Length: 163
Image (cartoon, rainbow, N blue to C red; front, side, top):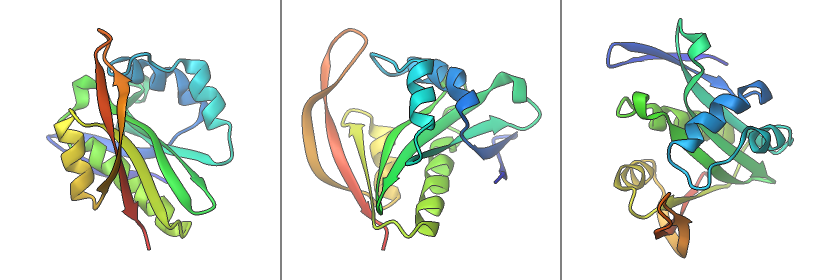
């Protein structure tokens, strides 16, 4: 599936993730997560039947790799966003929303019942996006995340009913 769109004079497409994307995903993940996941981590996850995801790529710039990605899993109708990230050079263009929309479309087609995610409570942009998409806070994980400097932060557990 290829879903093109235009945002801020740049053309992007949303495409399914493949194991071959693992190196690009690790590069993007490294920008914001401590500790970051490595290429082998993504290869292992993308090799599992329950995992799926999407990447945003600039049309005509396939060699530059992914501009962002989302990785999710669906187990018997209960789904979870495993991770989502947009490369710093591509932020503030709506890619996070479009990646989430792709996951929601897939889960709708699979007739999944619910989607969960965890988000750093200090990530105001992400929390706002998830609330706009219909997620609500259902819990909190204390000191779930750590910054590169080792500073802990809480995760909000969010849920969206899909049926």
